[in-house]
Length: 113
Image (spheres, rainbow, N blue to C red):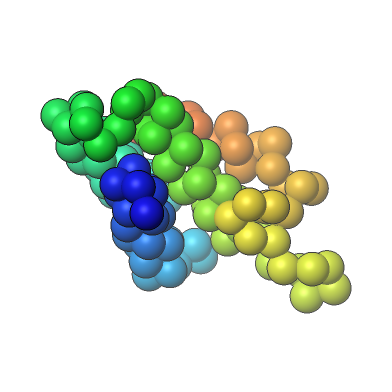
């Protein structure tokens, strides 16, 4: 196993665990997404300080960002009649707005009312 695979796998495990403890119905979305951004930022800093492990830290950061956003999308809509979405294939019918919303919160930290 390459070191980058271990770093990416560990990061994804942390993001999955964070996602599993988030209650979409009653939790503050901005707080959750801020926590995700903090985890990704810490991993990005580690990758930049250890170029022998990761050739291009921005690729790892992007992979983790897309993965975390897809986890978010899977939690936004659960329809028992359709196959369960997962982090690689989120529910397509709700993606546009939720993707925009997630990206906005990730970049700005707060969503206007």
